[in-house]
Length: 395
Ligand code: SAH
Image (cartoon, rainbow, N blue to C red; front, side):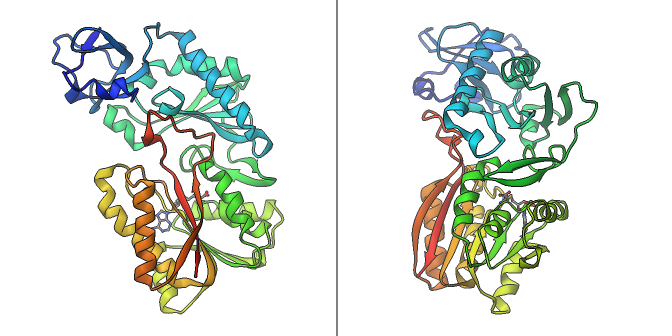
């Protein structure tokens, strides 16, 4: 099936951006099966790209290839082998047994996220196109990685936009049920990871390098870790000799795993406190109580999934960063993050600057952070660069 792009709307495809919006496609008559392959043609009839078709989503087509080549199992095998090769070059395995093997558009596989946790792969399929090819991809993954077990975590909200229902469960493997939580390691530290119910595919793999870096700076500091989840930053801070760590999250399940993580790493439990609650309220409470810290970590959930949410998200980011600057002692470190696609790095830095200004403090950036390399960013898909972080010192 051929779809013709409206005049002028082929520009993004010529720049190799993989998304085609419904409004960019010329009207056509015959129905197209969900997830099936279509050719995208320029107004003059020339070939632009081969893509998957999403009948419901505003992103009506997602490009598999800009080359005139068949979309079949061998095509996907080549893409998966290339993704595996990138991770081999990164040598993530020396640092962790868990990493992202496939990062959707940035690995030229829109709709597919695959995370490897030692001998289990966790697959997330988010589009009509990925749903169409899911079984073939699962087979290729087993063949190319040698890993027998694949667990599916296709339970993210964005599937709704594609008219897809949530699916979780065992996709491949001899096991009758997953032995979860599993234990993975990161820079010599162990973490309990709930692959079935945890956030994302169980662990925030994108923050691996940042947890290590921030941990290195935590020695002898009183640390406040906000939005701590299962304690990634807290465990690294404790292992690096933090004086004390206070970890805050609204999820009791996450905090239960955090306590296990302290125990399995034989870290000093007397230096750590878990607090279940809302960070926005607790930061205010700490301010009213005149509490102070030498290091504050802010790693909130995605406040702005798209640019449409940017304004409201900006207020939320400013609020917590302002309070954090107030709670920091002189010379204290703020490690602040945003994983919102709708707030880019420049805007995020502006928000943090205006938070410092309103808090009445001087602050300098000593490091810019981003997502780990196993979450690569295609130069043609800048939306792939979603995680940004700043390490600031309060002057
Ligand atoms: N830094 C963590 C990941 C944080 S993810 C790591 O490295 O693993 C964001 C966390 O924020 C989630 O655990 C979620 O439960 C928590 N959260 C979301 N809204 C919250 C709120 N208002 N107050 C406290 N925690 C919140």
